[in-house]
Length: 176
Image 1 (tube, helix red, strand yellow):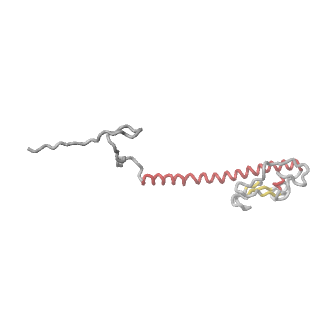
Image 2 (cartoon, rainbow, N blue to C red):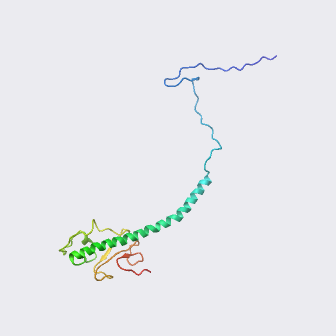
């Protein structure tokens, strides 16, 4: 007969845990190991992410130009509105003084009293004379070439040059 081997497990005696920790059956705990990565976890693949980016790029290519054209249209409208505001101020100046401001710098007469204006009741505009929506100064001329009995007032548009299709003025222009 063979002697039977007994499986003997050794246990460590229960030791006191450090202050503030619950007592454990072991003195030493080994390093905490994270669970092994599981293959059945759900995640996006690189191909799926690239496909989403391509779809977003296509949508942006379709949508962005539509809004970009609206910006230019809004600037054209702002310039037209500002010219109308100048027109109101210039008309008030003319009612008070009997004439429109003369010369190319006549818009300054709306905020600063000219020497020859005896009945000036301005300023006719709040603040300084603004530039057009593209950052260029408005062009004022009195007497005007297009409006000989009053004044010409225009914005040279986004290109900053007089005479293009993009000019905004207080007279009817022949658009090509």
